Amino acid sequence: MENKTGKYFKYAIGEILLVVIGILIALSLNNWKENLANLGEESRILDGLKQEFEINLAEVSRNIKLNTLTKESTVELIYHIRSEDAFANSRYMDSLLNAVYMFGSFDAQTGLIEEVIGSGKLSVISDTELRDRLTSVSGLLDNLEEDYIIRSNYYMDHIIPFLSKYVSLANQDQYMDFSSWSNTYKTIELSESPFIQKYDEIDLLQFENLFATHKLNNDFVTLDESDLKEFFIQTLEIINHNLEPDK
Image 1 (cartoon, rainbow, N blue to C red):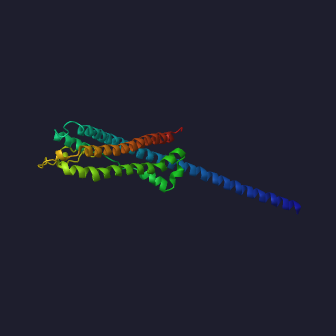
Image 2: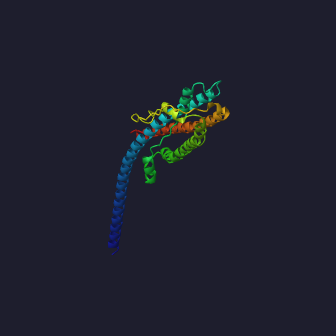
Image 3: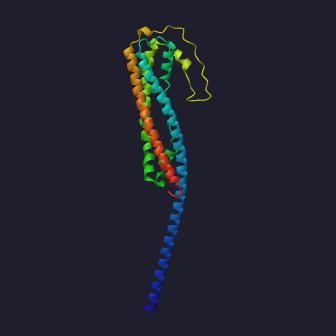
């Protein structure tokens, strides 16, 4: 009986060991398959993120050029206001007033970033720095959007009402150029206004102060965009590094 009990005990232990080994092997296979799937998913996500960040980099770079021209035109306008006879050449003044209004903003492409974060796939990305950068994108864009709103609201609420009292806004239409936004759009150009402009009634100090503030608002926008451009460049470098086979 003791011999039989010993044999049964050894047999049971062996069966248990086989079951445990089988479970461990199954778990290992599942983990291996899951890791392969995650690697494939990570690669697909990284490819998509690369395209999204490349689009954003190109767009913010274009917008920086546009807003830099606006800033330069604003500076030129301020110095022109300070000149001996700022309104001697009304056409030149109209062209400057148009140029300072041609500031721009851009809508970042964040569809994949939001999907990765919202779906819980952020953990699939192995690079912790890249994960941190993806979660910080919305904060950077919110800060930029706030400065966009400040600049736009200031121009519409303060500069436009001021100019409307003294100069013809319609005359600026002759210098309007939409090529920065569209290669195909054609506007209907307004003819020169028949109404007399009230240059002699303009308070030059107030005129200068309005556009000095506009320059400052645009400076904050361009500063945000420059920081964002550098952020996009650095993030793309990290994405490209993670896409390398021997990373």
